[in-house]
Length: 416
Image 1: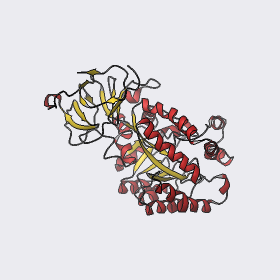
Image 2: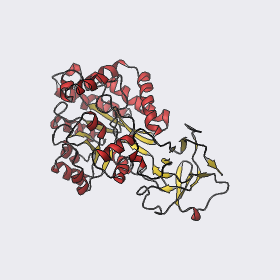
Image 3: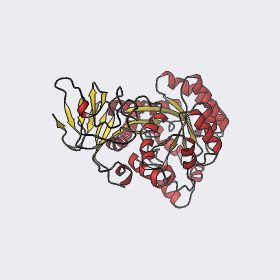
Image 4: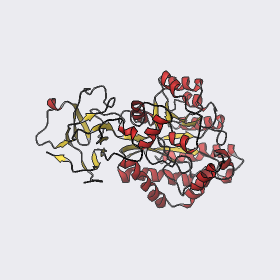
């Protein structure tokens, strides 16, 4: 049976091969079994040491590799329309900045998003989310930033919350009101940032729609001073921050974000040594987005070796968005992180599990497997863990346990 089954994952799971580096410190490194009770991992260890309650269901994993549920920690999943025409323009020689200054880019998605109803946005985002769910994504970040007004930012964030409820997936919402200037604020950047800080963010936070706050800090977007103004507003509300940093130029955004204890700095192709040092001190995660690098045909590589030497954790994400990374495969991003950015396979897999969890503030519940954590994991029917980074266009057909439920399996499970 292939597809969704939504059966309880409670019981003993055995005949597992545990991928390296995925267990918590209190789990035996030679574990080959785990026990789920009431949707939580109750025990991890050797099958020979299992002490089971009577009539415990048993699930034979048939030697599949076990990883935590994957985490897509940077997406813009909710939006109206698409921007394939801009892709064609860039192929014909236009730069990203030229497209944006000509009225394309983010603002074109704003028009389409404002025109779409909440239910229309939910339907289109649900279809996109299905591709990520099929690859074992168990947690996802979804940003706003295509509404750029209170009503439409609210609409995007409400859809993000509904996606989590509808699909049984952990969703972290990020308010990205400072993504671009809306047309009605053209030439009035200071007024718009004031609106974001004084009206939009407080209202949306009061409605429980905001888990974190982001800014696009770049020459074509918002300055360092404007970014800090938004960060101060977030700080006053007790909300963590993150930043689109150093994608197109070195603005010094990463160092600023680190001063505010940012969860992550994302893109960071032009990240400086000073930015790396600041991120190391603050524990800020570097989120690598190879889909945007590839789509924009960028040539400035992120400073991977310097990040590695500094011990800055590196996450990997799709950056799914309609303009610069229309990617709907996190496994493809794993491959690109290895081939384009020279990550090792263990680094790339950590980038979509434990480091991605840290980038969302979910490190205590997601990204690793151990007792007391929710049952979120994937069983991969592959011969080697490296196959998760190896295949192009051929997805392994995994069994996915998400929020304590078996939400997908490619074959009948052995129940004993």
